[in-house]
Length: 148
Length: 116
Image 1: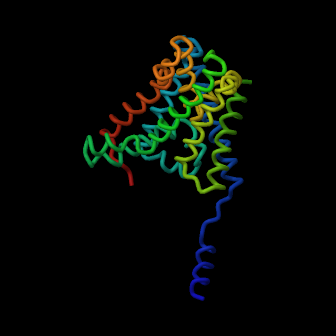
Image 2: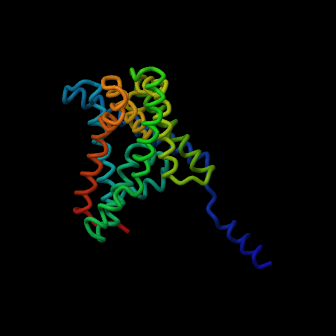
Image 3: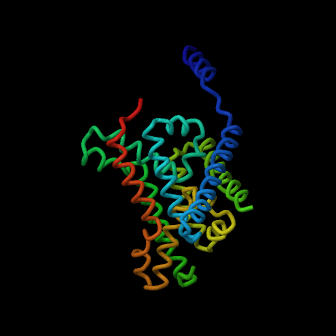
């Protein structure tokens, strides 16, 4: 009896997530990130006069720096809570996970804190990326000879 | 036109991620890992190369491009040097992203105090 009452109370006060709104918000924010990426590529190609294919390196470095800096200043955590996948899926999410791990574990020491924990969240991205790229690379190499 | 494609492609990738996150019990870490594997998978038949061609930066910003760049560098070296090239060229193109993320987060963590 008490249990059922408790369950009712909990379900009444759990905030309902509007899934359609979340999806549209992620679409908009993620789209803006893609647009910023393309604009930055054009900007670097125009200002620094480098080939368009090499500008992606500059663009990714810029976005990682912005992600790290905003995480340090404390804005990014709120934005990630609001926009969710719109900011986690772009490369800024990678920078955010590394920066927040480095900030949180700094007081445990240089080696046992920062060194051991920096890749706590980003490590799975690198590990599974390398494993899958190796396996799919073998498949591609055997099928098409590795030509791009 | 490429700006519209960039907006639509990046938005679509993020929307798919948000739908997966909302309707299953996977954490954001699972979703990003899944997308990296997906990016490497789409490169077997050069599908992701086509996305980069039409959407430009919109296809390079989402984390799927990380898997794409890993397999792209590995295959480039492999076509020159054979089988061992897969391991040699794996980090050729992604090195900049990983190194700059490490350097920035290491030095910035000394300058700032953690909030909350």
